[in-house]
Image 1: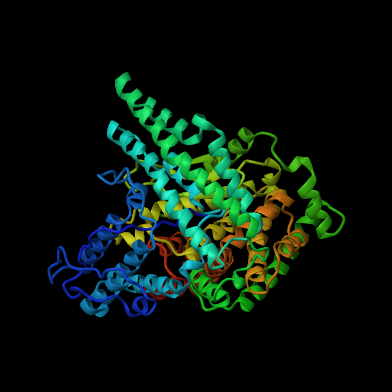
Image 2 (image 1 turned 120 degrees about the horizontal axis):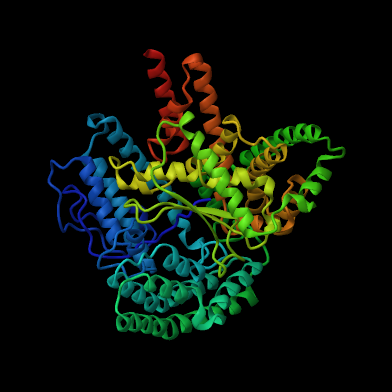
Length: 611
């Protein structure tokens, strides 16, 4: 899973095109009572500006609205000490910018006159804006605080992992961000309170996780993760002792006087909501919940598959993978049922590491061997380094199993594979190899490093995402590892199948929870019966799907499409099929909806046959 979501903040708008002028708000926005000011001209582009310059202007405007986005890209300027504006007005302005840019692009440029890549950018921008518009009516159905996305842990994680300190000015910006945590948390707390009043709250069991994150920071006092990180970064600078002492003192004051009181107010609000929170788990219970889930499925899969169709695909794939697992049972000489084999691999201590260091060392060894093999299967290789890190202690209880963070385009931050080692008995050795390939290489790190490095493409293609594409690629590379000669241990191959089974099961339980009104307990029981995963792993996963509706369906839907396209290319090209060229077609366009991915591959097949 990759880290993604950012929210934008308001500034004066840069004109996107002369054709836009002082355009009114999009009709969809006005009809919903939006009151954000329209985007107005402050630096018109010349009429002769290319569409690449047009997209660059849009990116500059969007970046100006989001100090956090700039930090993710490694940009350190006068906004480096600020947080994004969390207000609804800011979200309205950002949405208006996107939709008005779409209108201006269509008015100004004709795809028939553009280069092939420019025309693709045109279509991808349209698709991005359409996905955002489809979800816009349901934007207040998102949970502000939960164990996956809440600012209670995201803000400290941002400071620790994203805010780079290479100078005294950077350190001062860190201090400003600590001082700014209070207003930020208070604004989000107020928004959460308002949504709760309208019936939008996560289920009751979510609150202990959020409360635990908050208490971990508060109970640590001045030894909390944020101040420890700042002190460590400060210590690496060549500043005089008095300057360093003054900066740390200011950070301490900001934490005590701004962050701590706001965290205390947030804690009180979370405890208040916990007492009145619902016990139903699916988003069907939210305002227009059924339509909301339909829009989420379309957004994440980039298809028009219904919940029933996705559920059926999941059941079909589960049956296929179960049969492949039975073949491995026979290979290792296990006598018993598939469920008994699941219990054996779930419970026997031989399948789990006893130390975090051993787990990390094995993951690094798999990555090292894979890196040596990559040139045989890939022409375009990642240029950024990859590091593997355990999830920080303050958020490891609530965080997901594993996730990836992209490198900074200026090389100031490597790609990072985070693995959650809170409970080693939830992290099977059998799955370790496949997980490393998915999050590292040839999975997310290879894909995101290549994408970030596509300097000739617009920024929204270099830094944006399409979940079915990116997560489909990650899951595809798990099986690709077998084609490359890995998974020599049958139990590791069983773990690979277990990971694929997990994604097939997601199609069943995600739609079960949010469409068929399964409870959290129903979904946990289904996974326990049909997968080999440990109880803690299953519980954490179901809890993720509850608060992140629809996202989990993207993996298998995307992977199945990539496999389908590869087999189509292999069949049509025969001996002329080149796996490295196929991977280039997938990777060098950046993320695209699955329908456009299919067009790209079919065009490549036609060109290869013609030549």
